[in-house]
Image: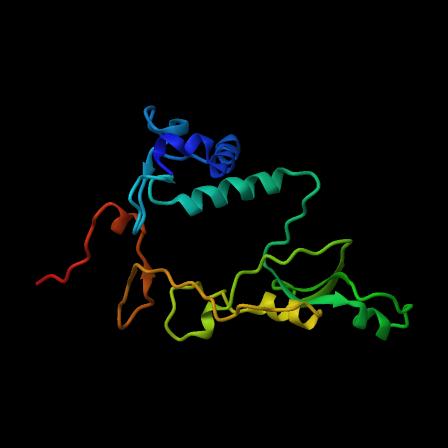
Length: 196
């Protein structure tokens, strides 16, 4: 896609929706949708809407704020899912047998150190991957595969576990945790060099 065609691209609707939610993307009156576009590594044209150099944080902050204001959403911060409540758990309690299903989640309240059962009509797992199975990875420390394990224990099929993304631009430090460097560095033609 060329920048001129961004407004017809299916991703443009998602960007327009994020703008409507207040995400402060970097502006350019001449750009598609009035946005400044940048490139990432390997891109031949500018196609990446960004919020300065903190796009993920800008999107996260706006969507988290919207979730906090939504009357039908209860956020449980400092809680950690432990396992899904499935038919096998309910059957142990003497409930009628029926088709396998998920009834909610067992979650740990980190502040009280208590595990509670949270019932739900539907459960959606959006827990990230398992990149921390590798000693050296650009994945976050929380990418431990817990959600995948919960799904597996609940009877879901798990596939393609060998496909784990590693961010290609990382600064290695022997005494500190390696950290990511923006993809825009390479996209805009930057090079990382040693002092000599």
